[in-house]
Length: 204
Image (cartoon, rainbow, N blue to C red):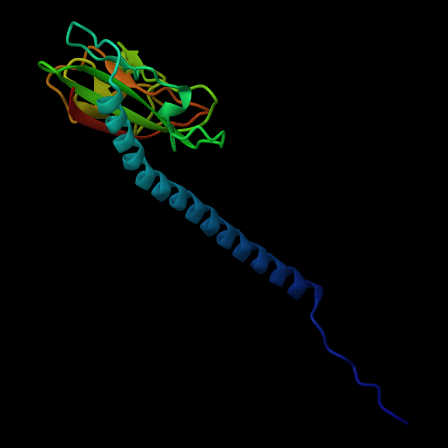
């Protein structure tokens, strides 16, 4: 007569615990992967933005721009005889989807020179995004935390900080007198489409 051997196995409780631990581990791995994708995108944009801005400055200097404001204030700049794809990167009319574009503001700075500020943005719509001017900078709900804004009088570059749950804007570096107006890029789809702001004096 043979003895029946009882085979041991995992209990239901052990299986449930194992699945729970595996699920928690996968959540951590998934979160790390998404964070890596985010930082990879940010790194790519920080590398691309100066290249796009350099191309913009060269085009402005070579092609020329329309009339600058006569009162020494900043205004939007447009290239002479430009096509829509001239403002996109890469600026080749090959009908491929463009990921970045730029716009610029400027003002005269002496004879034959101009102060030019280029805003580089990720392509989020088929319409070119242009900077807006705000005369209520400290309470403008469209100015988001971390935005770079340009003083409409001096052309100085400022960083905007907005506390969570508040619409009050604090500018850095601190100024003795708050600017009367600033230029900034409006948020799109709940985020700031601008990935870089660059300035240069250009001679024509």
